[in-house]
Length: 256
Image 1 (cartoon, helix red, strand yellow):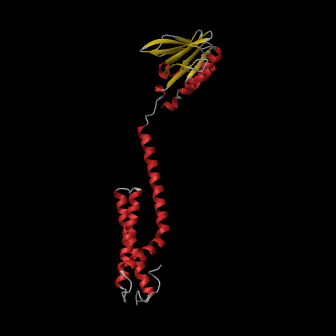
Image 2 (tube, one colour):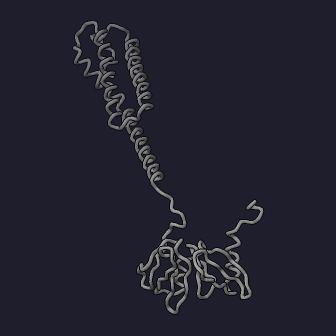
Image 3 (cartoon, one colour):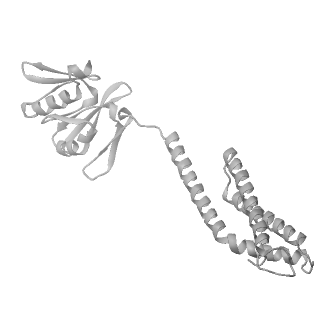
């Protein structure tokens, strides 16, 4: 550092003692500044531009202190205060430039992480979980065009009708029907993941609206909660239907 080199015109003191005074002054200034910064961060985190201003104030304060000390111990007074001030500023910038750049980059990274965390928290706070009953079911024809949509909880069952399928659903508390130009097999493939269960060659039922599964003289039958229609279960699908409802009902020990 320019100020720390031995210079008979600048000081008659021991160079090592002089360097110790300057180093202690600089270190003390930085420690006090960082303690104040820590207290400030606890109350309210600084923005990047505020931190840059803080660093600039640190450099100015450090420069003024070093310049004042150097000027006061300038025995021959051959160097003006402004020249000492300029040399001190150059020395400080040279020594602290890289550490300050690193600290600013770290601060910027933390600020971005805080912004991301705040954004994620906002998304989680504003997002409303959609229950399965509020899930929409969109029905498409053979051409892939959306032709009918309703909430999943409104769909009762699907009935085969030649090359068409009849979507039976609840509309304003009444059972209604929509004719869909699509095969039963295609509907089964498209909506099995949404709880549409194939129980007969001609029927799919919405598991969500099944009231009970019962056995009569003709075999298994399904009663729906919102329809008077009794849906038969053919022998081909008995095991599949029984397994589906058995897995959905907890065992006696689990219910206890």
